[in-house]
Length: 143
Image (tube, rainbow, N blue to C red; front, side):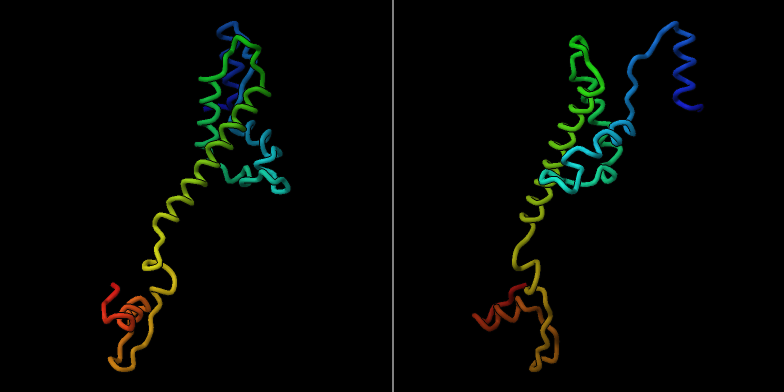
């Protein structure tokens, strides 16, 4: 496949048409990298634009294409602002979901010092701290 712009020029000539606006994911990346959510000096910072997946940026562009009303003088600024809002909402949602998942899986019994191994000199074996606590507190096994 040739260069996108060469293909587009050929398509315009073959169809007696002029394409007024072409927006690619790289265009959106370049535009949004200085917006607050992608600027590490801002309070609203989420991540570097380079860390946002190509798939997510393409989703934002597709959503803008499907949702924005072309009859109201749609321009590049409207598209980039829509993509920014979509990306920020989606990234914040993913961060919250990640935190919620991590917190829901965490229990003292499956993390941290409960899993530490202690040497039991009486049995000459290692046992988990959780088992040690259970044995000392009531003679029960905590596994």
